[in-house]
Length: 401
Image 1 (cartoon, rainbow, N blue to C red):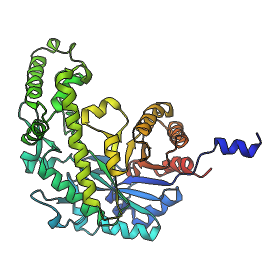
Image 2: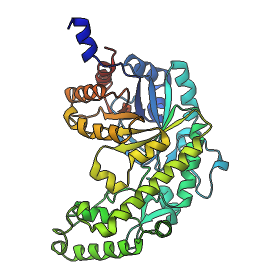
Image 3: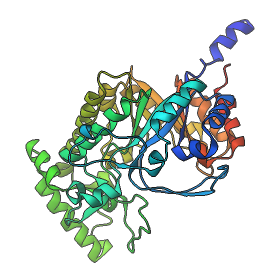
Image 4: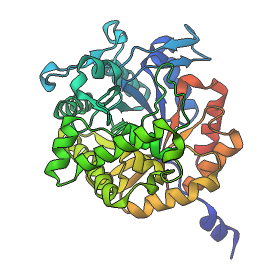
């Protein structure tokens, strides 16, 4: 074999798309032209702008105006068309009122030769769950879980249809859907506390929703949700009384009774798949594609009812969150996802920040593995959180061979 033939066997095709997750204040504070120029210098050709987002407290090391940002919770970063929404109306971020919004971002990005993708958080919204308590998930004890909107509820689904349709009308390339699923019990809520050692099975049971919408949908699907509710409540009460009562018997989600939970798991997945169908219908007729986020963790997929294979059949692809450190840990779950959604597009999302990314070598290793496996589109997290110098990791990783 000559040298040119050897290169053909070992080289991989160049990256088709490299997008940076970021926030509107990154652009408003840093300057649209300046930020876009910096991204292009580092071989990024798109941004994924948070367009509907939750609360947070963020350290922003290179922001010229502030180093700590407290987010306005549960707001949208565009001017909503009210007629697209029903009872649940979007809360608009103050940056929009000050003249910075998705429309301006699209205009300025076009001048710079960058594509704009929209990053939309779906079922995680504390202000809406508080203002409309009936749309929040309810646990086995009837407690409203305000930061988790129930994907079974028709008003939640109507709200999300309005958001994606409205965002698509701005001409974004794709809408990246985060939290388009049931949420887990633990989600980093303000001063979230537990005084008992919850194992994975108990955390799962605490996160289940038994709101009226879920119960009606499950009953219509001939799922015995009343029996699941009874088991969940009684098991948790026994655990709260003394962990030793059930902790050993039900340590993981897979230990829960199959005769109750197999059909229940399948029904929960069907709720999310049907929601994906409704959101896809909402953007039909536009040039925007949907890329719901997918976890590579098989156990966690059960917890949140994530079914990337079924969702990808509807949307044409998913955005896979490759939140592992070593490329070797990425290979097996990514290969499984590729088998399950054969022929559909996978966009890979990788951490660049520390300590999650592991470091420069680990980041480069993940990129190498993904490219060897045929991934050509990437998202990177997150512009505002990392020093400018770390953009060089991306520049080196996505350069043409």
